[in-house]
Amino acid sequence: MTKDVIVLGAGIVGVSAALHLQQRGRNVVLVDRRAPGEETSFGNAGLIEASSVVPYGFPRDWRTVLRLLGNHSTELRYDLRSLPSYAGWLARFWWESAPLRLQAAARDMLPLIGRSVAEHEALIDLAGLHDLVRPTGWLEAYRSPALFERESLAAERVANAHGLHIALFDNAGLRSTETSLGAGYAGAIHWTDPRSVSDPGALTKGYARLFEREGGMVTTGDAGTFEARGSGWRVLTNSGPLEAESVVVALGPWSDLVLKPLGYRVPLIAKRGYHMHYASDAGSPLLRPVVDIEGGYVVAPMRRGLRLTTGVELAGRERPPNPAQLDLAERAARPLFGLGNRLDEKPWLGLRPCTPDMRPVIGPAARHAGLWFAFGHNHHGLTLGPVTGRLLAEMMTGEATFTDPTPYLPARFR
Image (tube, rainbow, N blue to C red; front, side):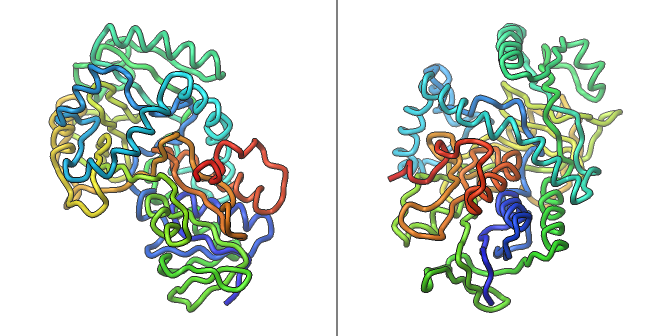
């Protein structure tokens, strides 16, 4: 079977790329080992961001670094056996996080972050998925009054510079706004422009259904079988061998594995993260996702219950799950959010694909015609899926791109 484009990976980025290529007249097939939206796109805090204009950098405060090295934090845990394999990546991440380089990364990411909500809304309208998305924004909550005061001033500067909207709540204002919250927070910054999603996996599946409804094909297959074949590409699937002139690698944290045999050494690591759903023992529902800044976790209202998501775990893909980080976050969050019984049989463990320069990899491969990359979104895959799909499709079809793609091109990694 021959198509115009094979998209490898049915997460939010791959599905969005397939939709945008389809809208531009390409005959596309979407290939994954699982159904759409069941890997990285399934487990996150459900935020479609507009306010995270500064990427998550390596901390430059050595007191923070020393605290994290203690390996008892909900923000960051690491597996000692895996740490040597992360050393080179972390060294470059630290270098890229210097103030001027971090500012450059923020400038480069702004065109994508700035269009993220609008690009999602266009697909939500087409797919009829309004019931999954709420215009609630999210709360950035602080325990320390001094830290809350300092970060509130910084947030006002960011909001004014980028046309964003915020509201500041002291303790009383926060508890009147979110009546389910217990005591413990000095205040919170309400970022009102982002959207929250009650089921990220269902949103991705809904986009995939739209793709199929418009004539696209979704099938299961092994991305590891993809290979150059003549002037195009071939992959083995349950529907038989598929061939296409172009192939898009949108495999998130597994992208580097399938590209390595072709000679590409993209510095991609998979940061691990956990989530668990809980019943609520609070007297009223949580209305917005809450990021506990000092706690290093997020609690978000989802269809299934309250979803608690952890910070980062640095551990190899093959290492067994470690419940310590989730358990610590649960103990901190339970009295504040009225967490009841666990609703999942076991914690969900997922992988977040991250590059050391905090920019995604979007664009053509340097040495193979018809090979395209779309991965490495550094904690913002759900946010950036549709806008990435648009930019990639514009490049692949020769349209004028809505922004200069140079900062994201694979050629920056040699």
